Length: 114
Length: 107
Image (spheres, rainbow over the protein chains, first blue to last red):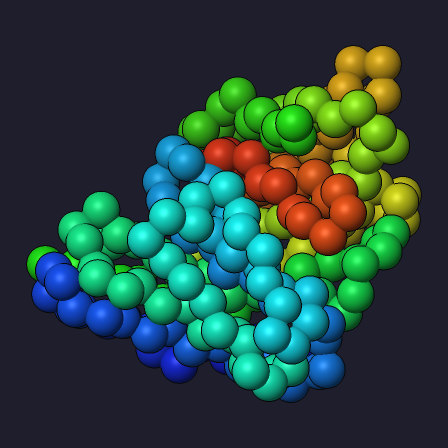
């Protein structure tokens, strides 16, 4: 079964810190995604990547950047963390673009910015 | 623009009662729709997808293009169905999610 692993389950950071959230998938998936999950707002796409070194902005990219140097790893970077970035962050992957493709999710990273 | 609307944030039903979680979408092309579920302390996972026309854990969902809906239904709710449910629309290489419905099944 596909495994999507997020390096941290909980993170506490201070305002202004640079934060790295790491995600690794083990099934050679082409596409990887970063979402944030907030009560009442659902899942909102931050960035996605369909190939190594390729990235596309999602709906809420402001304040975030991403890196995909290797196919299996997709990193989300908060350049200067702010309190409004306190959220649950979900990483996901899918094999490729096409009908019926489904997302496989990591277990999430709960980030608190103080 | 692609949009997914789940009008109910919270839904409570009694065990054994029918349940329907509503999902409406806005998309000009041919939609591909999914339901994802997140049980307590578990990761988000696929429940079902419309192209498979399958029934998973007793749940079904029919795509109604005329009403642009993809409601999730189960005739007899069980306590283990209590979870957060998200409707999702897949277009190109993006997945758009609704705001989710938290279902509680009362014993």
